[in-house]
Length: 161
Image 1: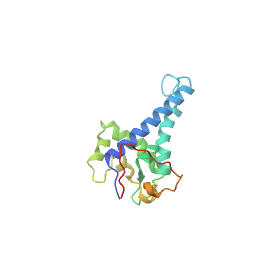
Image 2: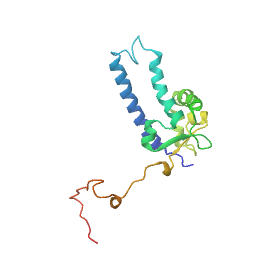
Image 3: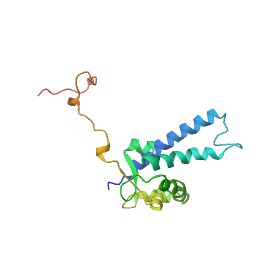
Image 4: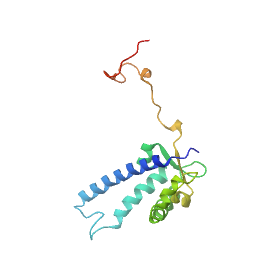
């Protein structure tokens, strides 16, 4: 397995946090400021946050941040872990990893299999998505006329061969 590097995982986490902030702000705007703060905070507010992590990880093996970063959560056999494994990974594992002053998350940098404590608890690995599943990039010459507009780059001189 090609284990995902720490920085790629951090990139995915930043994207996910940004999306969660947008979700929280939207829900807070819709509820008139009663969501995620204040005396009328409901348990379903927490379910939005946990549901984001659990459902995406359990069903697809990827949160939107992981999709952007090109990484996926798998089990020992290389399959998507499923919701039953995602629940302890995201709820218990992340709590333990974060509560220990972030040491469980920093552990990713030192572990040979790049597992954080939440990965070890659930028996999961975060790996690079196989290249066969990623869209291929086409070179400039592989496009048909009209399929993509030509780029004008006056600062780059073209060599004539």
